[in-house]
Length: 259
Image (tube, rainbow, N blue to C red; front, side):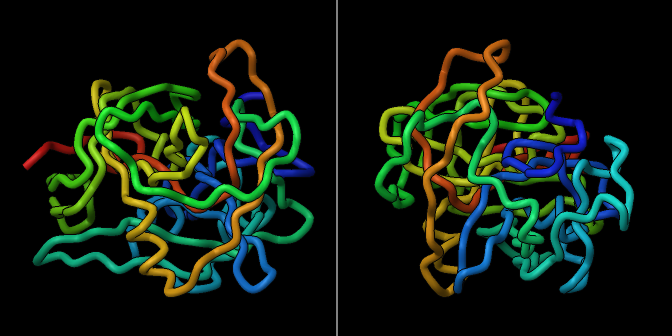
C-alpha cells in the first residue's frame, strides 16, 4: 500500500490525513491522554489553519488523495494551538481523538521488532541524526543543525508568520510531509514535529514545547513494524508519541525561510 492510500481497518502513522477543507499532510504519531488515543499533526493540516472547530471530522486519506467526509472519517478534532498573527509562534500543533477501531501503534517503516519499555520524548542535540516518516517523501534521515531558530513561513491565510524556538534539520521534505514525527536515529526518542521546510532543510516544533502546551504528560507506547523495504533500510526502535510535519505553503506547496 502507498502512504496516500486509504488505510483500513487500522490506520498507522506516516500516512495521508487532513481536515476536510485542507489538501493533505501527514499523521505524525499517536499519543494517549486519560486512556484515550489521539493522533497528532500540524494545526494547518488537521485544524484548517487554526480555523477549524472542536469536533470537526478528520479524514484519512487527506482530501487531495481522495479522502471524503464523512465516509473516510477516522477522528474528531479535539485541540489545536492558536496562531499569533502579530508576533512569534512556537507551535503548529493539533490533536484529534481517534475512533477506537482505527488505532494502530505503528509508524510506517519504523519498527521495534519486539515491544520496548517506554521511551520518553527528549530534547534534540546539535549534530544528532534524526529520521522522519512522511506522506510524500517517506523515510528520510537528516541531522540537527540548530536547536533554537526563528523562521518566517508563508502560505497562511493571513500571509507570513514567524515561528520561534524551532529545530532546524538538514534533510529532505516536501509538501504533504507536514505533521511527520521527527525521531532520533540513535536513541529512538521523539524530538519534534516537522512543520515547514524545503528540499534541503526543514523545521520542527520541539516536543518539549508541545508537552508544555498540552498541560499534561501524555503516555507514549511502543511501535511495531509496518515495513516498507523499498523505501529505506533505516529501521530503528521508536515509540508512539505526538508529532508531525511540514507547512510548505498551503501544505502541498510553498516554503519557509530562516530569519
